[in-house]
Length: 162
Image 1 (cartoon, rainbow, N blue to C red):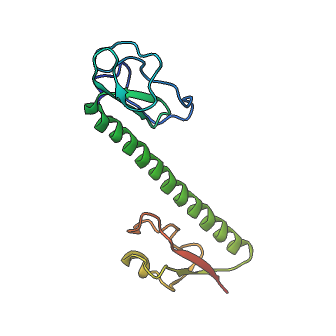
Image 2: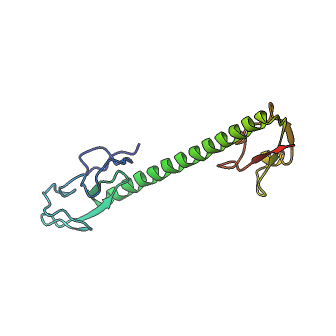
Image 3: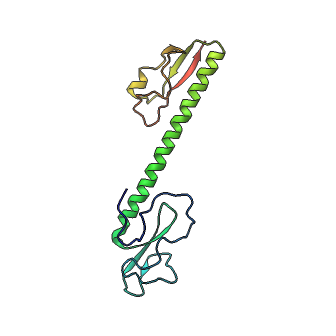
């Protein structure tokens, strides 16, 4: 995790869904600690010291009053939040693909179908292209998504071979 900005009095922002929108992480000037009333909604100058206060929302739903030097730290927190969301989406897509594959294989067994054929995308990776139009016994067919696929999300599919 990134170090907290020097002007924040609590931990650095992390993604959270339960933080109320509009709640401030800090309510004083990040330079001189003077109380700010009303709290700024956009960058402004501190009435006590005249320094520029940057107002930014964090991925945790809180609003931060920052020094200019703290902006990269908050940008890094946003990047980490976006990266984590992307990883969750990929994991979810892989899990859905695995469930669909298992469901198809179970249906093939129930119907007495003994073979499946692999279909690959036109832009499939080299690993998946080797499976293109390959027919396998249901019991030994490599599971989808293909383990060694070079894509972020394998787009191979199977059809029941009758």
